[in-house]
Image 1: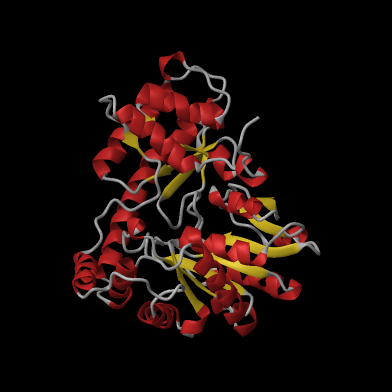
Image 2: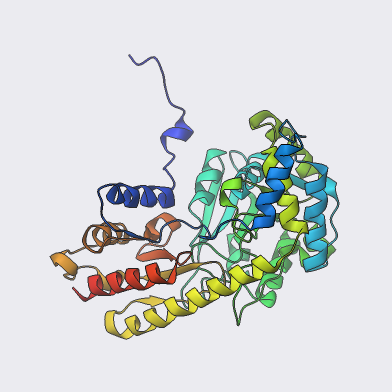
Length: 402
């Protein structure tokens, strides 16, 4: 008999689909194959120089020790300053918790609020870790299907219909990974009214807040009045806006009681976030913001190129999609290709097999929509160079043409 036994929660836990897809691509690259990799959701830019320099200065000043578990006061103050400057929202440092990336922040929120018997509403398509993190607490993920026709936006009617006496939380990602959907202010306010009427907390994952394109807008969920703000738990971080994915700094803003509970949890889990990364993040939030807009403009240029290449696919291949208003993803339906000969004579019947065949035949790596609660769809990250985008889209087109 085995000397160990894995917990039930871990036994049912699946690995991150985005990281698994990236690993497959990396394996092929290790064999000398040129792979056009669109799997990982991270900016391809280097962290801006003034932020890197702040990290060096912090090391030289000896800021290499433990910090308070919930983050240094300077960074909490900088986060409050960001929301005042950019969104005219007033928060106090006591409402802020600094964590090891936004994913850790999300885990802390769910683990502090949810348990067996609770329900968490998640609009689909959803980021791969949402349902997994809910299930780890013993709570139940209640998935609300949105449609391509709606722009993958959940309606207030859908939200209201999903609420039960067991509902603990709504998880809302705006702009969205994987779809790039950017809710309008009116759409958000309609959801906010439902939350207030039913006294439902809202975890608003706003990590892509700075990556919004022409024709779309961003409003923080907490901006629709004090009654809404009292039910809102904001999660964001420096990863996407400042090209700092590896620095692992995210934050949560919410009611003081919840933040205190999360800080207690974090103190037992991880002690504090990286001290050097925290000081670098102060420089990111309080320093020049020109790099944020420069990167946003480049992402918009890439987004426009990808959409221009994909629009003819609707008629030519039956590929459909809702054009993204934010983030850096194209999310498209390839189910029209199922059951038909593709490049190399391959025939596939689902999105996961489509991605595997595409990687093997065209050496293009995408992430299956099966992982995002959207069978038939695939996700392409355009957080890469124009040369890679052109070659990769050529490969997808040739693969679809058979």
